[in-house]
Image (cartoon, rainbow, N blue to C red; front, top):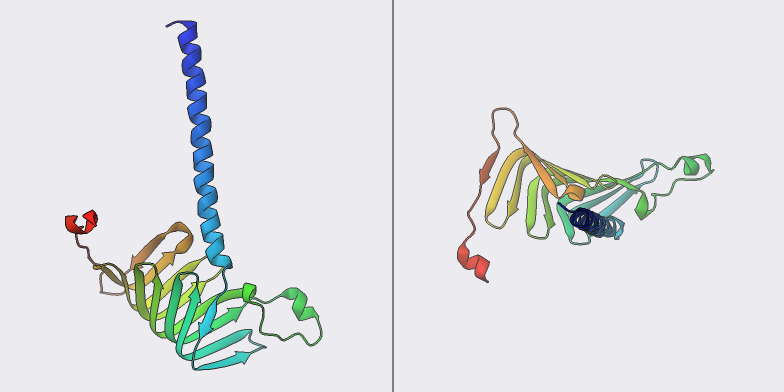
Amino acid sequence: MTENFKMKCSVLLSVVIILSSIIVDAKEASAQKTIKAEKNQPIEIVSNRLDAYSEKRLVVFSGNAIATQGDRIIKSDRIMLYYKKDSREADRIGAGGAGRAGDIEKIEAKGNVTVTQGERIVTGDDAVFYQEMQKIVVTGNAAMREGRNVIQGERIVVLLNENRGIVESGGSKKVKATIYPEDKKEIKK
């Protein structure tokens, strides 16, 4: 091989490495914007009743409670918002507000829980949404549906930042999955 050929290959390899790193950085930045945009969007909750407990840093929404953040919707009999404790606020005299929206630690849903995001629907008896970790844990007769596909277990963990889920069995019950092959007619649409 000639020196000229080796030099051209070296330059070409360097360009490919630089371009691939730029593309990867752009994809990661785009993914981070999507995650942050969802996490920082306001949470709207509607229900038949609201009870606020300042000392407990808790707000309870009961009766047909529906929480919406971006395209994520949580429906349940009762939704409880737990606020983070602010050490600076505890030092102040008379501090006892329920907290600010950005201070949500977790959201618990109790009874007839349905979590919807896009085409994915997760149902169960109870759910906990951890705001900071962007993680949802659904327990009790948990099922995840996407289209006609269904996965059932005792506990489903959805890791929103990683766009993945974990389904666990409980006791003698096994995880059960019913997966339908894609229909070629549906793909052509």
